Each structure stands twice: as C-alpha cells, then as structure tokens.
Length: 194
Image (cartoon, rainbow, N blue to C red):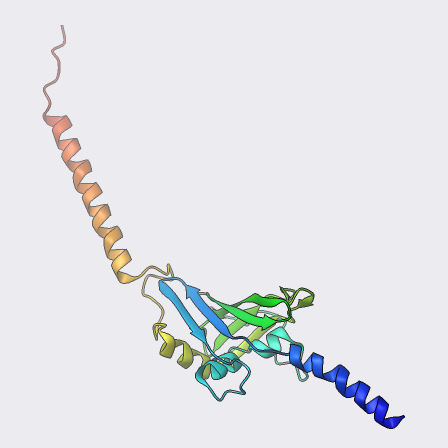
C-alpha cells in the first residue's frame, strides 16, 4: 500500500514539475531601442547567458509564487527612469504563451522589473507579479545585449540623438519658410485707397 501511495505521489508531482518551465526566448523593446531578441534555455539555473538573464530579471518569482517571496507589492520610491518591456516566450502545454515584464534599467541604485499580476499563460495559469529589485547583474546583461549604458539625453523623451537632430532641422526649415513668407507679404505693394 505504501508503494502505491508513493507511486501516485511521484506521478502527480512529475506533471507539475514539467509545467514549471522557464522561457525559451525574450524580446526587449523600449524608447530609442531597436528590438533586442534573446533565446536559450531560461531554466538552466544560470549556466547560460540567457539563463543568467532570466534569473537576474526575477522571471521565476514574478511568474510563480515562491517562498520566501522576493517580490515587492508596491513600486519602489524615486525616479525609475525610462521603461522598457521584456516579452517572454514561455513554452508549455498547448503551445507558447507570451508574458510581459517591464524593466527600468536606469533606476537607482539598481535595475527594477515589474510584472503585472494576473497575466494569463498556459491557458489557465496566472502570473504572480510584483516589483523585483534586480541588482547590477541585469543591467550588465542588458548592456551586453545592446542597451545603452546610460539613458538617452533626450530628457526622458526616449528619442535618439539623430531623431532629435532631424526634428531640430525640420523646425529650422519651417521657421525659415515662415520668415520668407512674412518678408514677401511686407514687400507686396498695397492697393491705393480712393
């Protein structure tokens, strides 16, 4: 009888463990950034670059409730800087699910992530969610993947320097055209008053 109970317990535990999968890919997007795509084995315990990125972003505690729970229920104080989004691709039963996690790489003193609670994945599961203080490892991984080490100097607008230069050139051209039209209107002879 004890063997039967042990076999039932083990057989029930295996499918649950199989469902505890990590992501297979991630896309990072945000202001002034060409989308960065990463992939690999997100549940290798940090053995690969993608595994370390997944761990550093707080993916597992944000997706699945863990004890102790490192997730914060309220937003950390202070200016977090520009927000970027990580869209995780999570393989599971019935196909792949997509889950979004915001990342604030320039928050001080450490990068912060936020996963909205209740996002549906695998059809019936929902994300645990919350705020996660990631530490310096996540920012290093993001910079290695192609993110700028410092936020753009557009005053938080998220526009690149070339985009700002283009806007300034267009504004200068519009101003020059307006001055030219105003000068022509002033030089035009006025009709005589009888």
